[in-house]
Amino acid sequence: MSDQQQHDDQPGFEGLMEELDGIVGRLERGELSLEESLAAFERGVGASRAASALLDDAEARVDLLVRAEPAETTPFGEA
Image (tube, rainbow, N blue to C red):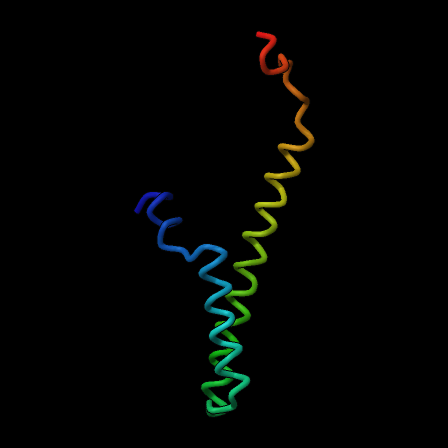
C-alpha cells in the first residue's frame, strides 16, 4: 500500500473530532457498561492523540512558512 493510500485511510482532524464528540456523548449519557465505557475511553484517547499529532504537524508547517526568508517580490501592478 502506498503512503498516499495509507494517509487516505486515516481520518482527518475533523473526522477525529466527530469521533471524539460521539464518544463523549455516549459516555455522558451513561448508557454504556463499564467494559464498553473503558473501550470507548481507549478509542477516545487514541483519537485525541491522533488529532493532537495532526495539530502539531500543522503548527510545524505554519512555523516553517512563517520563518522562511521572504522571497523577493514585486508589488502587484508594478511588474
